[in-house]
Length: 123
Image 1: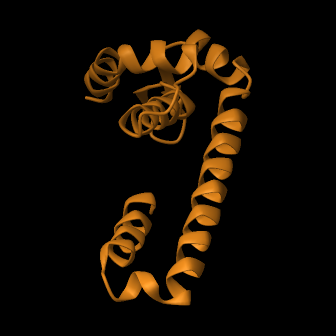
Image 2: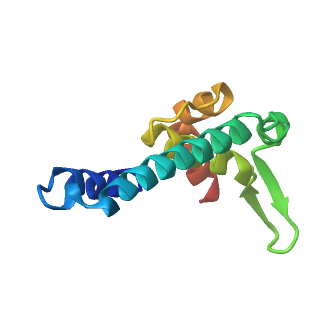
Image 3: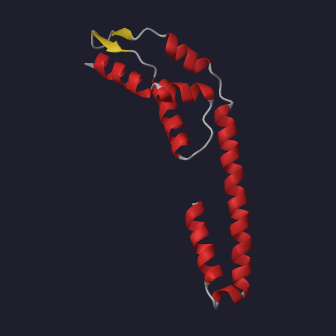
């Protein structure tokens, strides 16, 4: 979003005819306002995500890796879905160059290990 808005604003600002129009000034002001709102939203999301409790992660890591499924009568992998979700979110945050909380970064670093364990136990 930031890139698309930036391209539009720089295109108008770099155009010899359009930059003289009053609408160009309004566009520049709106662009600055939109960027400020995007930054605020991003900061709020990062703060909320970073402040999440470690308890679900701790619970997920303490669960036994194998469990008996009464419906199917089979032994299944018991890796907590919240751990996989947290690793995906940490991966997304890392790709967006956002700060990743310590616990999420640690899990993200071991993502291949957890994925391998989960895949091997599913078989």
